[in-house]
Image (tube, rainbow, N blue to C red):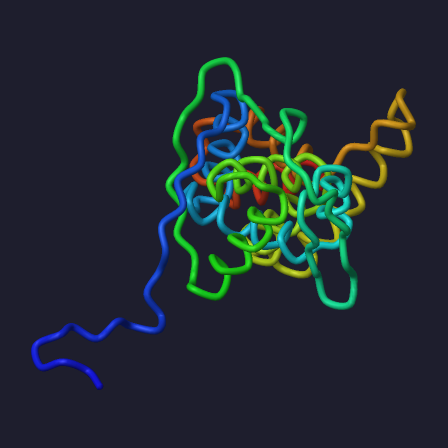
Length: 208
């Protein structure tokens, strides 16, 4: 029974998570934030959530589980003991990233951290970095917040330009992504307003 005067907890209340990440990685997140004109916390939260729900990303940690971890019908078997090799010590200059998750997502992250025998913040830092650099999460984020806001013709032109660049790229094993192309356009058209406007101007000039 709820006591009189006791404040009832909201079921949708967000839970704070404040991992430390390297300055270089923070700069990468900030660049996506600037290009997409979205808060850096939104970039971090969205990409981390994609990693937490991506079996391929979780497999990067399969040799570090101390306790069993279930992801859907897949179980990562823990080694049932803790020792120094499971502890991750970060070196170099770090910066705190302020993230907030729903109770359900935070509980999922907490279970993942427990299985690794690491703190939630440390786990969030590692999963976020792995997902950022080892998946197409950034590509999807850029697609959602930039490319989808272009009209059909502009999207087609952007894809055609990307295909042409990669077809003539000297390093076949280093394909240019949409994110990489937009970074380049942003650099060339710096000062021309928002990135969407810069893309439109660039495509108009390129296809004129």
